[in-house]
Image 1 (cartoon, rainbow, N blue to C red):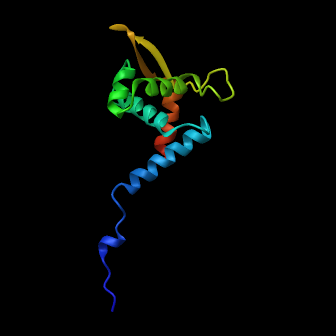
Image 2: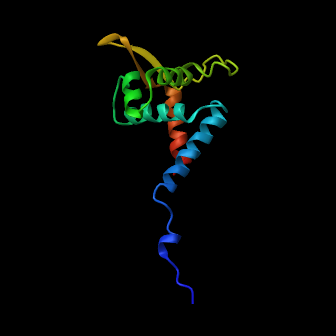
Image 3: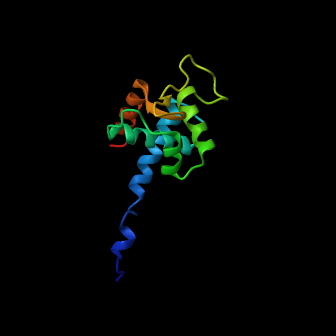
Length: 131
């Protein structure tokens, strides 16, 4: 008689989260840019989380970098891709258009990123894809 170990049958706790994240990455790659990096998706999700929490101005690029443990140049590139589109991708009239970048009204040297209307619609579709 073989004894079954219930621990072997359990789904790892992060497997569901990983599957949802991959679904969002695939949606991004299908609708925004097939070469989009996971880091860029993480930046979008960080901005979206702050949007969902009611932050009106959006986070500073430096806050995004710190929150995700990324360096500022890489974070800036990801924000630019979300705003303007990938530099190697075919240019559309609106670029990616998912985020808008503006100077911080308190410190014009800093930039803030917030979801555009298109970014909000994309976030809604992403949320539907993972539920």
